[in-house]
Amino acid sequence: MLEDLRWLGIRWDEGPDCGGPYAPYTQSERREHYLEAWRRLRDSGWIYPCTCSRKDVAQAAGAPNDADDEPLYSGKCRPEKSPLLAQQTREKWGTQRFEAPAGLNWRFRVPDGEIIRFTDLHLGPQCMTAGRDFGDFIVWRRDDVPAYQLAVVVDDAAMHITEVVRGADLLKSTARQILLYRALGITPTDFYHCDLVRDEAGVRLAKRHDGLSIRKLRQMGCTPEQVRAGVYNLASAMNDHPSVTPAPRKLIIAIDGPAGAGKSTLASRLARKLGYVNLESGAMYRALALLAIEKDASFDDEAALVRLAEGASIQLEPTIGGNRTLLDGVDVSSRIRERDVTEGASRVSVHPKVREWMVAQQRAMGVGGGVVMEGRDIGTKVFPDADLKIFLDADPVVREQRRMAQQKITGEVAASVAAELRERDRRDRMRAASPLEASADAVTIDSTSMSEEEVLARIEELVKRKQSVKVS
Ligand code: DC
Image 1 (tube, rainbow, N blue to C red):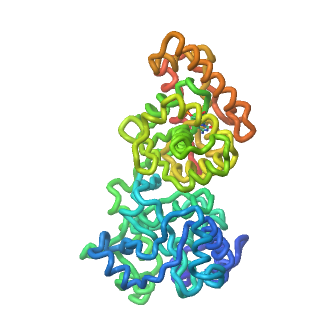
Image 2 (image 1 turned 45 degrees about the vertical axis):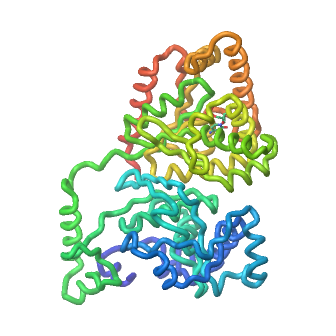
Image 3 (image 1 turned 90 degrees about the vertical axis):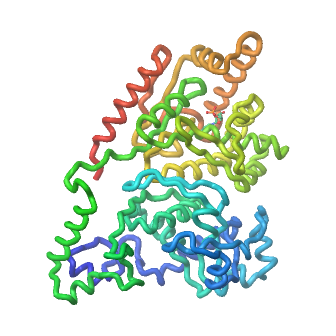
């Protein structure tokens, strides 16, 4: 393949044949990197051994759900979900099997029902449901090599890859890989999936169908110039307007600020206007607080809270004009606005380990851009490289009044709700872990005497400016 690419006139700065800062580049020489990731996944209970053969899996799955993708795994070897999974795996399989992956397939347990979202730089917003669009997938094969999904995630992270370009047949694998990135606590790359080139019968060109390869064209007597011209013509034909300017860049927009500054309304309106996904990070802290209430865990017990978070599925699902928050698949969007949860969210969010978990999830949601995320630490911690950072502030009295009006509260209740709001604000600003503060490169907007329309117009202007900036 390297030889064919060189013939075609393509050159590279790093690689197996010329070395580079992240050598070695040959997969078989990078085993230690993959093993380290395998150990981390094993110890955190994300993966489990599976003895099913390919044939077992194909038979159990029945009709293929997607001819180009692997069948859904039936879950035959999948153990019960448990925080002690790693320990149970060791007990069941013995220390030798536990210490080295060889001899068994190791599968990643996907969070059933969770919607994995990302914005593809070419194909736009994507969403796939774990357990339905794809099932538990192999990360280490019984013949003792890492599976594709694990190898690419580990390599791309180790080699500081920022953008992956590949065929659209791998879109679903992106969702799998996002889960791996998340489980390993790594920020995913951006993804650009190209339209597929197909043959006359509509079948995508692929090695296994003996599709037309560069080697074949070469053997047929084509010159590199002819092949390059052919690729260009093909790309032009696949694109209605080959010479139009590219679509505006999909940005990551971070909106931070204290409660009552108007972040939520603004983020939602802005996202709708831009066709972006609106993610309200506070809802995730709220969902965890609700879970703690339901499970009778203390808001002060950091370890218990992290265990709860890891064992649960907390999803933010964008809807038309808003967000839904799902906790283990149940819509808790209204419940999490109640006073006990509001107070709990403020308390669970002070713990560094809770925040670490939240930040990893939130980063995965921003893959590919096209996201407006609001919260307290989005510009400082979640997306320190966000394209646009807004710090939305307002006079405390005005913020309190807005909150009361929004919740239609008056009288004595209003006074105590206002006092709670002040206390939460204080906690947000004073906590040691990621306190609420404006990132140095954020644009601060004081909305005290501005209407919603005015704030929105101001931000839209900033977005336009950012979109027109050319990135190299
Ligand atoms: O924005 P909100 O009121 O729904 O947030 C609920 C709580 O979570 C709030 O007390 C602050 C905290 N939070 C945080 O610490 N970091 C975020 N990114 C978002 C919210």
